[in-house]
Length: 420
Ligand SMILES: Cc1ncc(COP(=O)(O)O)c(C=O)c1O
Image 1 (cartoon, helix red, strand yellow):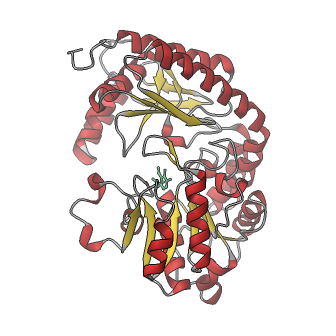
Image 2: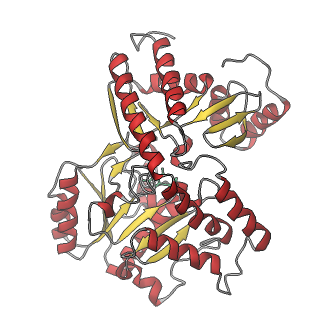
Image 3: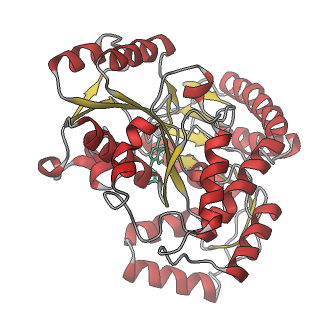
């Protein structure tokens, strides 16, 4: 899959613009990863490059569970584009209302109130703001290693110095508890002033690490004892990425909100949501202006939502087939490349592979792209490689991806410190 051809005019222009007007290091890494080409089209599991190559997409930061350009989602979006893509926000928009109803029903109906955003961080912002306003308390309990976005409100919950550095004085009061400490939430709540507990059932950006179910259960019980809100951030894990619609709801955790994003817009449009209990949503019941944004509930994105949920459910069985093929194949790769792959963790369509160093993982990601497989790094654990196949992939595509992974791993040095 290597190519030494000079970049096309499209690619050259893109790199020049990126370098001048966007973060130049992104331009550099994009150029390196694309081997001089840029992405120009996509369909299903495949991304087309400007030099004619095609790559399997098992990355895209968890957005494309339905692959790229799912036909049902495209059709719904095209229809809305022709009808009314933008809301007046003075009149009631039936598409936004229908999307909220579809989402509440999808999660079982106990969480019945919705706030829409575009990025995951918007849903996190909404949830913590509502929790503080509804409780009159200031502090949030989050989890060490957790990732909840990078806007200032959400960043207070994200536990990584690389993203928080230089900003501590503007971050809201958050205490990060150890994922191994079942008593931590009880202790913090007893100390007073805790508005909400916010956690990811499985920490995606932190290297695909599930939290201990018993610990989470103890936390939720302690939160309930103190009328502290419980928020499950399932922006990465939800919508069947980890097999279930919501890991928190399926395990019966008493949550006041489930946060969703990533593939909520069907992999076509940016859309996120905080799906809340009446109690958490109380500030918006009293005054809808306390939290709003111009594009919240944007009809074009909301048109994608019901169709995306239907398509996800229609592909759920296929998703389990893909998940099983991934689990089997990655166990084999772990065994065959034990000197490089230190651990494999995952669930459903979200898998993490630990390599000995961040440097090696970065190299591997570039080499995989050159060989025709796109994956994602883990933002908070750069030594972990993340694989997120779409549920619409076939077993043949999974095998192809794992073959590429295995053969690229074979080309890496046996001693990771060695020059490659
Ligand atoms: C669990 C979780 N919460 C929140 C976010 C933030 O989402 P976004 O980057 O769309 O703002 C992410 C992003 O990866 C995430 O994984």
